[in-house]
Length: 190
Image (cartoon, rainbow, N blue to C red; front, side, top):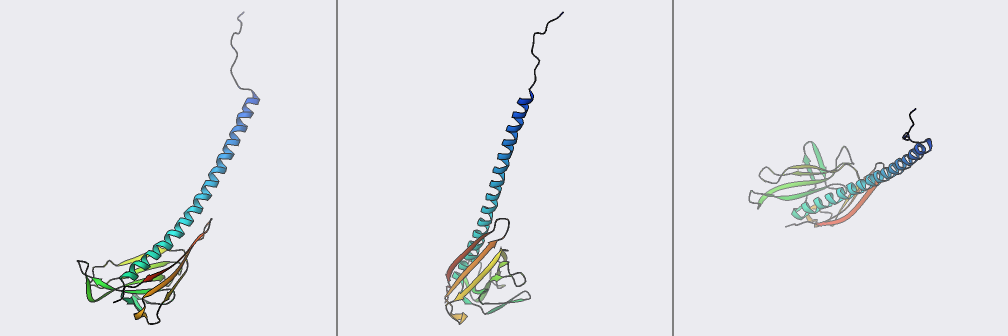
């Protein structure tokens, strides 16, 4: 008769239960870390979006104000008439020739304000004169606008030298974020 010399390999029930318990703990901890990091990312993304949108709008206001001679009372763009008021500003900017020099008596217009049909959309419209080389633009700055206010240092738009603004953007999502920015822009004038 032959004698057994080796021990047969395998795991006991207790060993399997310990391994399963450890795996459950690791998966639970890993899932919690993933959920926390995902929420943190969403929160940061909302804040970054809000800050970026308000800063972009402020930069554009300052860019076109510095180039503007005056504000325009009304301007027809497409089939929509825009009016300079507390929510919309229309900058009257000298047109440019191919060498970047201003063209006497030729003006381009930059309009910033909420879209007339969707007030959450803050838009920048640049409409150059046909003689000007300035680029035509229709730029969506944000679709999460919650408020914009312009105030002027003079009731006569032709004499305005400073435009003050307040812009509020709120990203309403799983983790809402909001940004508010105040500023002033000085027109170049004549």
